[in-house]
Length: 356
Image (cartoon, rainbow, N blue to C red; front, side, top):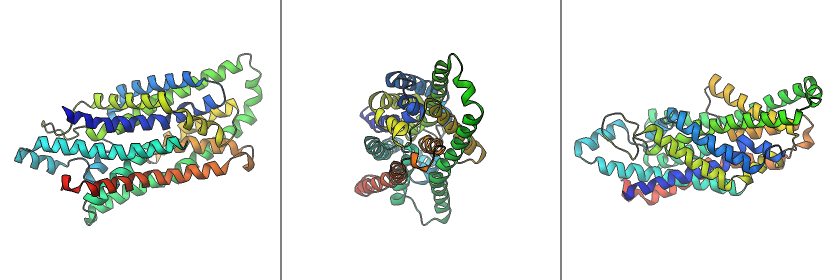
């Protein structure tokens, strides 16, 4: 049963994701003083687990294609060969170990970025780690495989520009329209402050549920037996349980080490009023929906919320936005998947005797 200890790497990945992605849901609410930090992390941790349990399993196979192409997850032909040779237990052990290596490298990268207070995309770090493994083991001399992998790589790399830029534009427009059309009217309401707080709680709660729904599967997906052939070839066979374990790991990260990134998003990039912080969450959600559903681009909530904060700040002028902080965050966006990929490649090099 010691093989299940390899799940610890996936749990570490989830913990790292939680330390970073909590800012996406309540960073502006906490920074503007509308919601207390303890209240925010409690709501996030609960709704992340609920989102993972209810809907997280639907996304369990999202990373399977690129993981299989890069020799992290077993292909159908590999599974068939293992069944024929009677070596499925060896396949399970090696699959779990490869998943542990990828998650450990990606998780370490995200943790370092969280320690440095940079909001980054955990999913992109995972993708970078998977590609790093594939660059050592996969046959990139195969034109078809190379085209598939490079296409996937180009798609998620394009979001480094498209996602934050789109969020900044949407946020800028929303804040300008709100200030012109609604700000004076709403500020005169008797229960204006209560209205703002309720709005934050609803928006932040929905964002937390979405984190569990969208990201939990990626925390443990590489441990899931995605090939439905009646033969167990990986550690976990229940999709809902796999996603729920990921959600719990994310919640642990939220509860223990999320404040640094949360305050970076909420205060360091641009000063926001309470209502502007709420509008930033709305802009982030619209960005995810528009780019995810309309253009089919896998976007990062971290990049969306940072772009939205910049857009809200620009409504007051260029000098309001701290572009020095934003530049450092942008560098972290690019460097985190590259660092995860490089680290994984080095580990692949050191462990080739096991997998070859």
